[in-house]
Length: 118
Image (cartoon, rainbow, N blue to C red; front, top):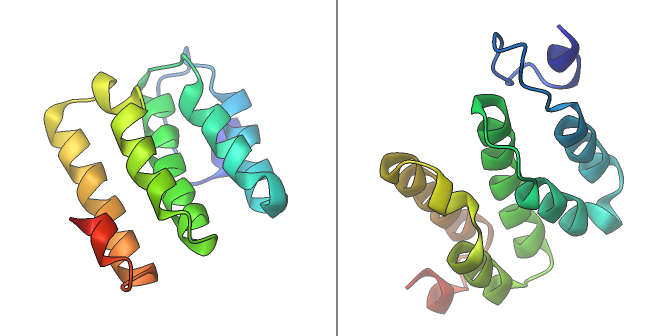
């Protein structure tokens, strides 16, 4: 109910998981585009790890990738993929899915950045 107010893509159910702060950061990242990268990094660095938090962090990975592409900071995407603890905490299948989607985003938004895609 409260989470759905922020985004209908958030998993419903597990009421014990408090992710309101992560949802607020995601909302602010959309509104305050100048600070979006730092806000999205805050989402990613959150110690929360339940199913809702994981879904929000996954969305933050995609939004962060788009933000870096918009600023042509492709090396930041590679560094993020190598250093983020998110990828260490999810299953291998989830990790592969997210990395594949990141590459698809880069390919569509920055086809000239071929070196980054290798």
